[in-house]
Length: 310
Image (tube, rainbow, N blue to C red; front, top):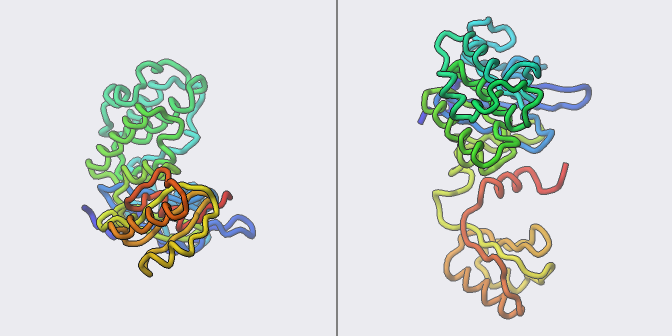
């Protein structure tokens, strides 16, 4: 796999404010060719502003942004033709017919993908002659994705590419993104779907309060290469955990993240499992949904960015 330091997209010390609010605060980001980089963060974390600076849609207050070695704000038309951009709201002309628009974008590039094949993969033939304003949100998403990728970009910025899609369309998009990545494109993906990031991303960058708070492969962030490290179960809320804490090894932590949801975190082996179940029996508690495994990317994300609504 390409090193994340061989960057098709390189952001260093990026700062961007809106009035008194600093949306991006000295952020560094690298996205490699031939890899999917997922940028994750809660609403207001600064990820969208960061990507818009990379796309040349916003001017940084400080720091540098380079896409394929060029400043996106001053890049010429030939450079922009090597970059595909998919905005979440599409930004597409509502009166255009779906497939006519994709064909028009294809004609702007020297070596586009086959439009009919792309339309088949994304299920666009059924709405080929329908104006965009009459399409569903999911259908517009697929048209926007086709427009972003039809020119065989070297860098593709995809904002929430499967928002509003049904499972079949979502799978088709995942397969297409994988194919584009395998062809050497640097794909920079933003999504709120942790399973999507875990499925697609070669590298994950978690952003909060305008800064990178964690980065690495999904396996590195979740510890998927190591032993089981958590046990979860549900029971009545607010159980007294003191006896369980005392019975477990010191490196194992016990908590109740939400009422009635219990988490035993640390090296989980057979002895830990038997200690937990014996404690439940002593409490007269039947542990519901007891699972042993590793943290998911969603667990990591919530640990890093908090569990409260924003």
